[in-house]
Image 1 (spheres, one colour):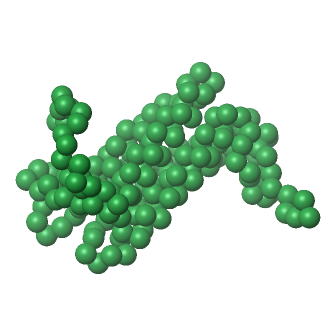
Image 2: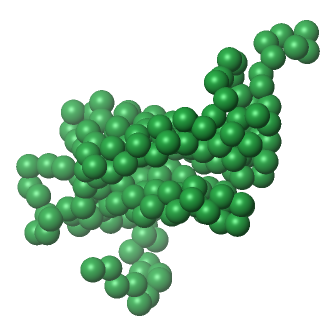
Image 3: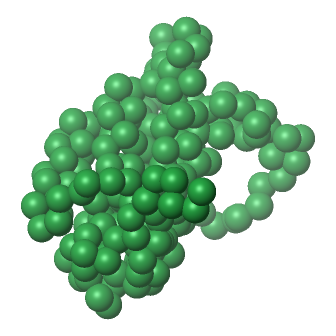
Length: 193
């Protein structure tokens, strides 16, 4: 149970932050950067939902579930796997969360026009915001993969898979809100030469 009755604690004034296991890390630490980018992805999805809530309620429900998952992912990353586990059961992304994303991707994608070239981010406001969220999710993924390459760090494999699928979901969702891909702005190679 999380209880937030005081927002500032002053414990980070020295440039460190606490992980879920009580360990202190510098605020520029790769792990902190990774879960910070997950949080940024969540905020970008929140902005996209300003448009999807009214115009695409089914998609909006999927995005709300993803926002909840992103807090799970942040908690997962903030509690490193290790030889000395914390005194509580850490929250981890699990396979069923990944499977739900895959099912949702397939459902949305089944309604889209086939893609024959790359899509420029844009179209409707919702699509533009979903594309921005996608690029932030890709940054989070890069940071997580880099962190996982460090033998001293451990990352939950399902967390890595989830963030990879999330950027795929956001791409498909952006096309979905662009009238099922019919109003996507397509890349024309060499158009302005």
